Image 1 (tube, rainbow, N blue to C red):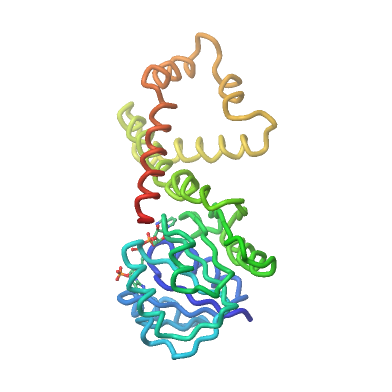
Image 2 (cartoon, protein in one colour):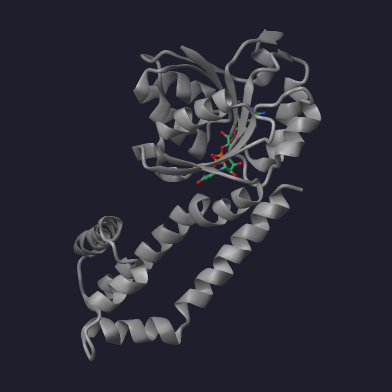
Length: 269
Ligand SMILES: NC(=O)c1ccc[n+]([C@@H]2O[C@H](COP(=O)([O-])OP(=O)(O)OC[C@H]3O[C@@H](n4cnc5c(N)ncnc54)[C@H](OP(=O)(O)O)[C@@H]3O)[C@@H](O)[C@H]2O)c1
């Protein structure tokens, strides 16, 4: 059984952990300073070791993969604590932290080749994460496969060819669930204002979203082409689409993804 160390078990770490625990494939150790108590309780019947701090690790550790899943601002503390511990240079280091570059890890782990950045997203909680992976140029094929396999348990996992794409993925798929939830909320509020009860609005909107996405996934037509199949000339959909056009929906998305992309790059500094 491969041994995994997860450092930081907040929203995203917990979502990934939930997916990994179900597989019964890994020997998992989790570090989280505050949540360790509730995590111990939550996973008391599972094969997971939960500890409070990096400093509680043994002086020599032997994990196959170490996952960094703290907020960007906490990474320095983690690296400072970890540098007092001997880690085998074959260990895979994988960070899901927005913005933090591979070279940040190389600084502390000069002889380590198997360093990765991964950008997952929150649907990992239901095994439907979109995971983008990028490997250090010197990473070996075995370690690439190992990382792809680990993250595949939480959802769709693709390997990107260069690190520059990871900050872009952060703005699209990493932050994407937040954008999608906000759009759903806007459509639900609009349905409420038309006069539907909240529970009816919720089912109409969520089923419309999931049905539309599933149709798109199974269809040869792309999203733009599908728009024209549902918008009859002079009809109701067209009337609504005109408002989207007037308010420049595409421009809004360009702006919001650029803002998220800029933030991802800033977080790396
Ligand atoms: N949330 C998302 O949708 C998402 C998506 C993709 C990527 N990410 C990335 O995932 C990372 C975590 O995001 P998140 O939303 O899960 O944040 P979060 O909920 O704040 O989780 C971070 C966890 O790390 C813990 N932590 C802080 N210092 C630590 C240390 N020295 N050792 C061990 N654990 C420590 C925090 O504990 P305390 O709360 O006690 O400080 C917290 O439980 C971020 O870097 C983010 O860029 C997030």
